Image (cartoon, rainbow, N blue to C red):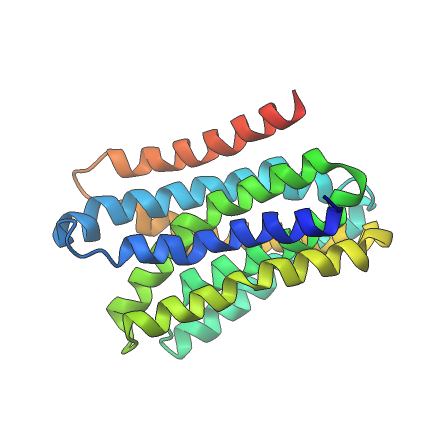
Length: 238
C-alpha cells in the first residue's frame, strides 16, 4: 500500500473520531442529567489530558528539533497569543465555539505534521494518528454539547458539519506529505504554534470546565488522557 493512501486512511480515521464523539454526546437516553454533569466533566478532563500529552510528547519535542531557541520561543508564544486573541473575540461575540476552535486548532496542524512525518518515520505518523483520534473523540463530544446547549442548531446539522470537518484531516495530511515534507522547519513552526495555542486553551477553557463540586472522578480523566498518550508513545518507540 502506498504511503499517501496510508496517510489518507489514518487521518480519515482520526478525523472520524469527531462525529463519533458528537454522536455519543447526542444519545439522550443515557441519563441526561448524569451525561451533562459527571460524564461531560470527565470527558472534558480526558480531552485536556490528551491535549497535554500531544503538547508534551509530540508537538514540542518534534517542533524543537530543527529550530533555534529564539524561533522556538517566537512560534510557541505566538500560538498562545493568537489563541488568546481568538478567545477574546469569541467571548465578545458570545459565540459558543471554544471547544470547536480548540478541536480544529490542533487537528489541522497535527494532520499536516502527520503527513510530513510519514516521509521520515512511519512510527511517528502512527503515533500522531493515535493521539489525534484520542483528542478528537472527547473534543467532538464536548463541542457538540456546547453547541447544542447554547445555539439553535439541529442535531443533524451539527453532525453533518462535524463529518465535513473530519475531511480536513486527509487534506492536511496530503498537503504535509507532498508539500511540507521538504520544509521541516515550517512543520516545526506549525507544531510549536499549535502547542502554544493548545496550552492556552487547556488552562483557559478546558481545565476550568473539568471541575465539578463534590465529584473527584472527572479530574482523574486528565490523568487517563495523558496516560494513554504516554503509553501510545512508549509502544510506538519501544
